[in-house]
Image (cartoon, rainbow, N blue to C red):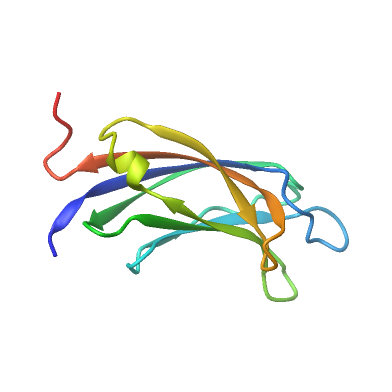
Length: 135
């Protein structure tokens, strides 16, 4: 299947994250992955950020037709044990596909493994079709 275009993802911030740290504050980082592909990206860990943090990190993924979802995970970095999932969500990319070149700014609610709300992640998605945006 041919390349459809590029999705530009700005991972802006997280808010109201559930505290997973037993002593201290969350050290959160975010992982995004394009569903149906091997493309993924990890933000920097924000040490002692607590329940709110800023990343403002950007990544671009090549997309092919049919890849309509972005999986978002927020983890608590743990230096002694396995990193703990704070929450995750699946983001429908079709809003960005339907507005080529226009940034789609959204707050994505995330939920823990038991589907309890565990915060939100702010993303700005911009789709650039193959060949660029027509004026």
